[in-house]
Length: 385
Image (cartoon, rainbow, N blue to C red; front, side):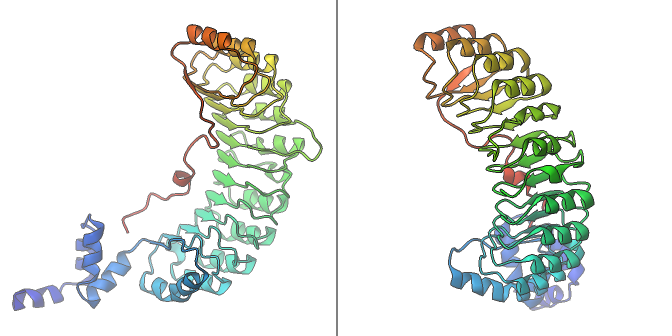
């Protein structure tokens, strides 16, 4: 390199270098920029907006990541997204350094960071009040106290994943709704201490709820839909301590578009009829392995679900030829039906359905997850790294 040009580059201000860096599109070119010299490396770190550690599944590597975290954070003070997912050995003390990012931090993933406790989460909420996305999935030591701290420190929270935080109760859920009025996405799968009453008075902004393998009570289900804004609801494998149905309460979710009731063994025809007539906007409904639905239930779906596009009836023991025909005679917008293992449906029934609805695709695959992508719901519109 020409000596005069090299000297000229050395006199470029950090603001000028930052402006140049932000115009670089290629990730490899951005990395090469930081390797030019110490000053350019500093600019590269200042410009960094996200920090993501990848799961190693190795406790030794996890400890090394936790050890170097403070140094990395001190070099990149303007991060808006940090993912420490999978670092199971991450201690509370490592979270104290997140304060460096302060008000700029908007997304934090502690997915499967099982070493984190309420104390560590409290430190995060004190130093990072502008968090809008928080993932605490399988953080087994987080309790209602941690959720209360989070709700009081991060009022802008919109998306929260506390799946399989097994010590969470309705008290913690109520705290979130009391203090975070903009919450729109909540994942509580596997939180079996929840009855659902903590949802009472939840805001209308709540539109996406994952509650797989929960034990929600009939009264709790009514509270779950009390906000009126739910568009997606996953109650896959819903349990019932009293052996009661209670799912008819979902009829009050007037804006519901996607509903997963797979393996809801207590579901009855009455509840199906109530949901079908009360939720006119449903576009996808998973009823796989729901053995409590008989002809009257399938007929109600055909009669009321005029916007239904995708229906899952895999391994439903009590759907018969008449029930399938009722679906074919109704559900005017049906495009796909997932169906296999339905022992009461005959070849003649299938043929009649195909004749009456030739445009409907019959698929034999059984789908576990429906609706919008979870990853998209927990992703910021991030700037380039």
